[in-house]
Image 1 (tube, rainbow, N blue to C red):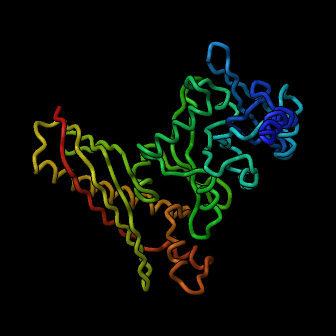
Image 2: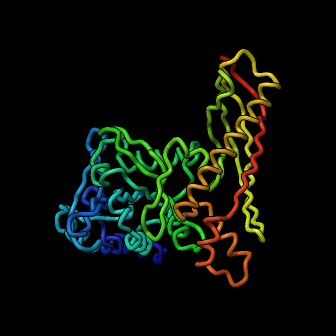
Length: 352
């Protein structure tokens, strides 16, 4: 009994010795942004939120310009009225101009920070990242809005899954080029994902426009839930609940890549009179033709630019003893590519 009484008496003394930080006295970073400044300096912007008495959220930013990322963070710490804490960072944005010049050192720095998770979202911004972070999106703070926007579009729409860990892995792999979503500031309260930026040697080489994202995702990722509008004659069909997967087979002598794309979907809306078996077959055929045409066109464009976000080179390397990457660069540009799609409409629904 005396033993337990002693523990109860000493516990308050022990807890009083632990360094405590009141959350209201911390600037918990929720997002970071980086832009290219004059004289090749770096401009960094930190986003943090303040929770007001009426339970609303106020977005606040601090920005500074310096030669290195560490100098930027040091300057920002000096200007902050409260300690800066990186543990809440969920989004890191890089401005378009910085992305064109290269930012791999910043990515490496983020990976080395033990307070930043590897699954945080990374994206490119049209214009300056600082301008995007200075918006006022949603009701839970800008970082939450951007995270939710990216999560929704990766899960339910046309954006391939990518985060800090995946981007760094793709970048480090020989035989596959990395990519990131591009955010466009529509106005002070709205953002849009305008495409995907593809990188080569630490710089943006190509942007896949919004209208081509469906076919891009078919090639580099898989759908677990998606939507696509398909024209068949004078009518339109809305295809939902799209599930897809791809498989790539490499043949040698001569070198050829065969991309198998399998799509299962459901017709939920159709502007014609009735979704008959004949209509379903026409729809399947039309989708297969569209996939074959658009994916092949996209891949040939990638070959012309010398970029390989699909990872053909990685597959060839894994199956080639003594793989010569320099030789592969030339072979890739002339490699024959074949697309073999298979679309299956599982069921039909609403008729307009």
